[in-house]
Length: 76
Image 1 (cartoon, one colour):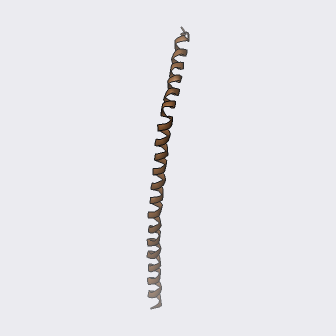
Image 2: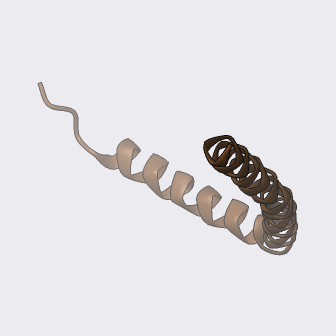
Protein backbone atom coordinates (compact mmCIF):
# COMPACT_ATOMS: atom_id res chain seq x y z
CA UNK A 1 0.00 0.00 0.00
CA UNK A 2 2.85 2.37 0.77
CA UNK A 3 4.38 1.75 -2.65
CA UNK A 4 1.13 2.74 -4.34
CA UNK A 5 0.95 5.91 -2.23
CA UNK A 6 4.53 6.88 -3.11
CA UNK A 7 3.90 6.18 -6.79
CA UNK A 8 0.79 8.37 -6.79
CA UNK A 9 2.62 11.13 -4.91
CA UNK A 10 5.44 11.00 -7.47
CA UNK A 11 3.01 11.21 -10.39
CA UNK A 12 1.18 14.11 -8.74
CA UNK A 13 4.45 15.98 -8.11
CA UNK A 14 5.57 15.40 -11.70
CA UNK A 15 2.37 16.78 -13.23
CA UNK A 16 2.18 19.63 -10.74
CA UNK A 17 5.69 20.74 -11.70
CA UNK A 18 4.92 20.46 -15.42
CA UNK A 19 1.79 22.60 -15.10
CA UNK A 20 3.56 25.24 -13.03
CA UNK A 21 6.28 25.58 -15.68
CA UNK A 22 3.66 26.18 -18.37
CA UNK A 23 2.37 29.22 -16.49
CA UNK A 24 5.87 30.75 -16.60
CA UNK A 25 6.26 30.01 -20.29
CA UNK A 26 3.20 32.08 -21.14
CA UNK A 27 4.49 35.08 -19.22
CA UNK A 28 7.88 34.75 -20.89
CA UNK A 29 6.29 34.66 -24.34
CA UNK A 30 4.35 37.82 -23.58
CA UNK A 31 7.50 39.55 -22.36
CA UNK A 32 9.40 38.58 -25.49
CA UNK A 33 6.50 39.81 -27.61
CA UNK A 34 6.60 43.19 -25.88
CA UNK A 35 10.36 43.42 -26.37
CA UNK A 36 10.05 42.64 -30.09
CA UNK A 37 7.32 45.25 -30.42
CA UNK A 38 9.42 47.92 -28.73
CA UNK A 39 12.43 47.08 -30.90
CA UNK A 40 10.25 47.38 -34.01
CA UNK A 41 8.99 50.79 -32.89
CA UNK A 42 12.59 51.94 -32.23
CA UNK A 43 13.65 50.82 -35.73
CA UNK A 44 10.70 52.60 -37.35
CA UNK A 45 11.48 55.82 -35.46
CA UNK A 46 15.19 55.61 -36.38
CA UNK A 47 14.41 55.07 -40.06
CA UNK A 48 11.93 57.94 -40.06
CA UNK A 49 14.41 60.32 -38.43
CA UNK A 50 17.59 59.27 -40.23
CA UNK A 51 16.24 57.96 -43.55
CA UNK A 52 16.90 61.09 -45.62
CA UNK A 53 20.39 61.57 -44.17
CA UNK A 54 21.39 57.98 -44.91
CA UNK A 55 19.96 58.28 -48.43
CA UNK A 56 22.03 61.42 -49.04
CA UNK A 57 25.14 59.72 -47.67
CA UNK A 58 24.78 56.75 -50.03
CA UNK A 59 24.09 59.15 -52.90
CA UNK A 60 27.38 60.95 -52.19
CA UNK A 61 29.25 57.65 -52.07
CA UNK A 62 27.72 56.61 -55.37
CA UNK A 63 28.70 59.89 -57.05
CA UNK A 64 32.26 59.63 -55.70
CA UNK A 65 32.61 56.08 -57.00
CA UNK A 66 31.29 57.06 -60.43
CA UNK A 67 33.73 59.99 -60.65
CA UNK A 68 36.69 57.81 -59.67
CA UNK A 69 35.85 55.08 -62.18
CA UNK A 70 35.50 57.61 -65.03
CA UNK A 71 38.95 59.10 -64.35
CA UNK A 72 40.83 55.83 -63.86
CA UNK A 73 42.85 54.75 -66.93
CA UNK A 74 42.10 51.40 -68.49
CA UNK A 75 44.77 48.72 -68.51
CA UNK A 76 45.59 47.34 -71.86
